[in-house]
Image 1 (tube, rainbow, N blue to C red):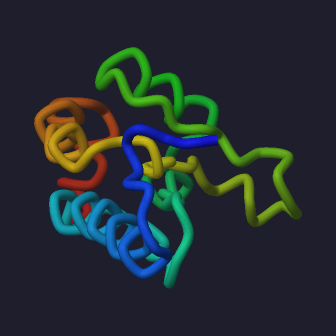
Image 2: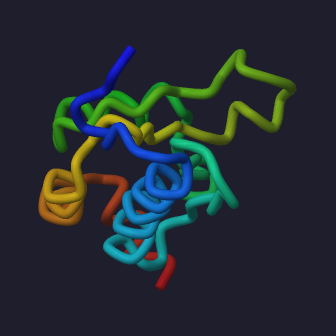
Length: 116
């Protein structure tokens, strides 16, 4: 199945696009406790380190920033319950670049700022 947001291109070009999307999120949210993957199509945000349960953080992101991030509770052993997952595979870079403005002022952003 083709994804209109992901170029139908040889694997190196598709990989480069996923890396560009990952790097856009990581560079635009410095100080946020992301687990930086070596590959893949998603990032994990350690919300427990910010004092939040994954379900609460997921709700904050959806309600306040219009970002759907999946709570990882039940996706592995107990360590998975620390995280929410940001999937970036179908999001164009120009939309990913809006994330800092969208999360600004949320309780999560406040928690990140208080750690600095």
